[in-house]
Amino acid sequence: MIEFQSVSKKFGSNFALENINFLIDKGSFVLLIGSTGSGKTTIFRLIIRDLFPTEGNILLGEWNLTKLPKGKTQTLRRKIGYVFQDLKLLMDRTVVENVMLPLEFSGVSEKDANKKAEEILIEVGLSDKQNKFPLQLSGGERQRVAIARALVFDPEIIIADEPTGNLDLQTSLQILSLLDGINKKGTTIFMATHNEKIIEKTNKRIIVLEKGKITEDKKTTAKKGEKEEKNEH
Image 1 (cartoon, rainbow, N blue to C red):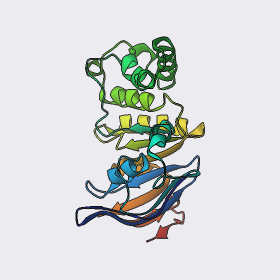
Image 2: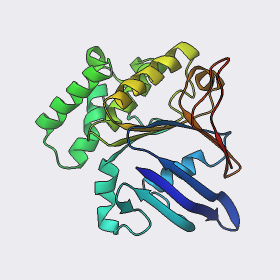
Image 3: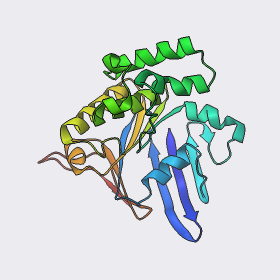
Image 4: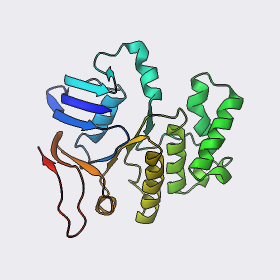
């Protein structure tokens, strides 16, 4: 589904990513962990073609993103729902209007966009908040709005960049549970986090990134008394 083949990305003479290799299968839920500046967001921006690799190939299904014609970029991005680290919600728009925006920008009628947005807000548990403004919501609710917006095109992949970054543990686990539910319906989830409590409580595959290099790829995380399976880089 998502494959990085010897991918490096340089900004000037400095490597943001160096010789990155991984394969994420369709329907997986994978965590990408690493400190601020380790390269997590750069990996995500490469997947949506907001950046281009200096070296290597990036495959998304049957598409080689390094060779994809520019005109196909919008089609690609409809396959990928992106939950931004800073959410990018418009504070002067209601919840339902924020979720409708990507559909309206793509030419969907206001009526159809509103209907789709309302359906997704039910899915993420915010049907009673659709006419509220983001500033009237809790941090967890705003995160749900961002996830709802990422779902409007029924994407094959959700990329979530630190979706629990500013949330308490209970709310973080609720967001993780929401993403789990989306994953169980077949959507691939690739999520960045540095929340140690989340990492401790999950049994998902974890890719560890340090200073632009993968240092560990844990195929499963161990519970107490169980053997941990992993690949080291």
